[in-house]
Length: 287
Figure 1 (cartoon, rainbow, N blue to C red):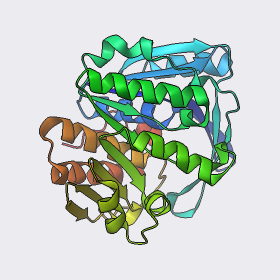
Figure 2 (spheres, rainbow, N blue to C red):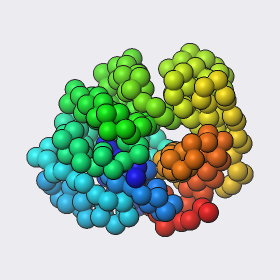
Figure 3 (tube, one colour):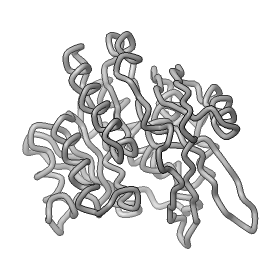
């Protein structure tokens, strides 16, 4: 079982003159996608005791993963998503003092005993409480014999500075066994202009995936670095594509540990995700 912990937020997307909302958050998406691919998955997060939180809680029940959901007096965070040409997105957030940071390691103690992997999201790292949870959860996972994965997913606008965002990410990278970064994030954290070189630098003592969008992705571990081209598809919406990639890659890693097989599964899932409205990914079978 892969236990995903972190943000559950409401995505508000503007498209064609209409506003659409959906339950989202990178670790929540990963949990849903693992379940859609036939894997065992659970999600732990927190939503506010407000109208949007009530709606999110109801939507989260539909994702197919086992759900452990706290409720908080803090507001449910919102992400406003603007679709750009080619399916890319621009994000802005209403997340100050958000409920998604109100996580407690004690809540997942029992589940960690059944998990092969604890997968951590990153938005909670904007708060001291969220950073403390990530550190405690990673330590508890390792003590229970589970690996720790982390999606860097930098959102500098949530921090006082880019340096603060990078610093928070580095703390969790140091604790993780498996990490995923975009090409831009990998360059920012390593200073390497070449994504393959960045993947090798990041893979010291861990498995690193660096995604390059329509160009493909790298996987690196123990000196081995593998590149795989992306499938040629018509992109509709890139929202959730990285989460689909990581869900499939983590599931494959949990099954056989092979980074080439994980990279292949991830690129296949990512390609499928960009051809769909992200809310329709659940239920699609890749193999």
